Length: 336
Ligand SMILES: NC(=O)c1ccc[n+]([C@@H]2O[C@H](COP(=O)([O-])OP(=O)(O)OC[C@H]3O[C@@H](n4cnc5c(N)ncnc54)[C@H](OP(=O)(O)O)[C@@H]3O)[C@@H](O)[C@H]2O)c1
Image (cartoon, rainbow, N blue to C red):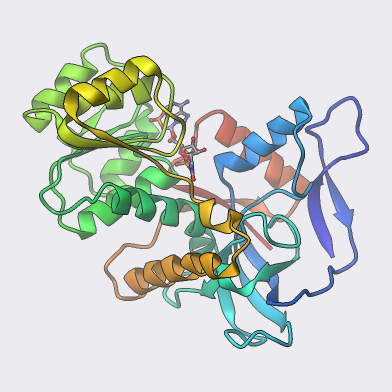
């Protein structure tokens, strides 16, 4: 099978990618073998590729977390799927490799039936970003009456968080977007009213966010880190929640949380897969099933995806470059 891998033989450029031809990995107990139809790209792919430069251990030289594809074989003890089933998955780091590969063996608990209303690339866009957004809103205990601030609204996670918030009837929403493309994506694809979008580079941005919300926020969702996480800690109201998918607040930021009696929730989408108890892994299928129901039931609009190209080293390189430039609206995908 063909895969796009980090070039482990390269001493000069340790982040170089290459195409490899590998034997099909043997199926282990509890696994399904999936023939990949589409994958999507996430910042974590770039972060792992960069971490190789720092000599951090790799779980696989084949990167990629999201996949949609067709089950080709199942281990003897798997009853949840059979060959021919169309599935999608966040493969975490429990599978035979990352998803930039023609075939991936996945623990069956990490896969779910693909939403029938979505095409391959739309389905591949969901697992990491969609479930992270879902997790963030759950941990925020968000409801229709919540006032919500989202830092980095136009990316994969932000876009899903916006449509999930809209689905629950949440109206008091302010999101950030710096580029015109990001602003247009929020207005045209996600129907966010223009007065709910703020450019975080603008010096009066903090005061404008408070003014437009008519006060501090019940929940702030940080998808940027650094200074934006500090801002999220300052934008939160008394008894509110700061939810972050990026990092932990500094001691100074923590002082604001004490002053506001606010809680901090760290989002770790891979947390359950780190357990040695396989029963914990079933949370992935449960969340994917819930997402699939929302899309197939028409409660959520199909996600905006950009197909970067067909399966190749060149496509992966282009997608990683776009992610590094911060120039992605919605999700980037690659088709097989
Ligand atoms: N903890 C977890 O489990 C978990 C899971 C998934 C993702 N994450 C993290 O969540 C963050 C968002 O992920 P994502 O997939 O939504 O990202 P993404 O799709 O790459 O986000 C792209 C958007 O982010 C904005 N952006 C890019 N670089 C930025 C920067 N340095 N500062 C501020 N805005 C920036 C750009 O819009 P503008 O025009 O507004 O700049 C762009 O449209 C990443 O840090 C990712 O690693 C964590």
